[in-house]
Image 1 (cartoon, rainbow, N blue to C red):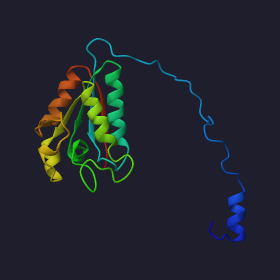
Image 2 (cartoon, rainbow, N blue to C red; image 1 turned 135 degrees about the vertical axis):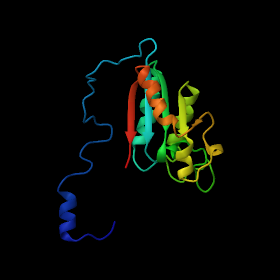
Image 3 (cartoon, rainbow, N blue to C red; image 1 turned 180 degrees about the horizontal axis):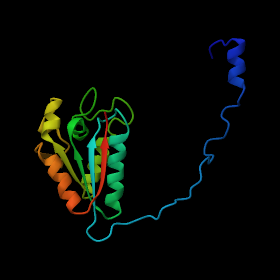
Image 4 (tube, rainbow, N blue to C red; image 1 turned 60 degrees about the horizontal axis):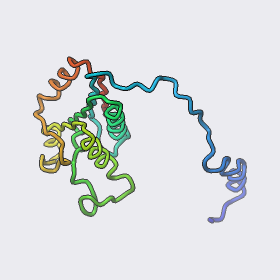
Length: 170
């Protein structure tokens, strides 16, 4: 360990670390709301306008949409604007598919699972073009859409009575 001065040592030793052993519970486990399941014909629609890895909103939105799908909702995710970058299969360094850091492919893997379990993923072509991404770079099964589809998809799912989760970053 680096040589510490007297005040650094004093500060470090004021509170013992770790204060609790690993595995200690510091939060209660009571779930307050019922564990709702979809009723016949219910939908869950997620709009994502957040960049992959720049905040947790995009990844959490995918996890929530997957949970809704598993609860029986017809579930769809629509990536638009910079959110379109979430749907790229070309992520990786030094080669596509390689993870330069742990979790680099969390969104990719979660989207593949979502699609495999029956969810629909849409991606705005204009959002791709803003960042020089190509349509052929999309994760397999992602449905490319026209820029005017963003609003009409929202209308479509609203008219179906869908629960709408809209995430936005910036």
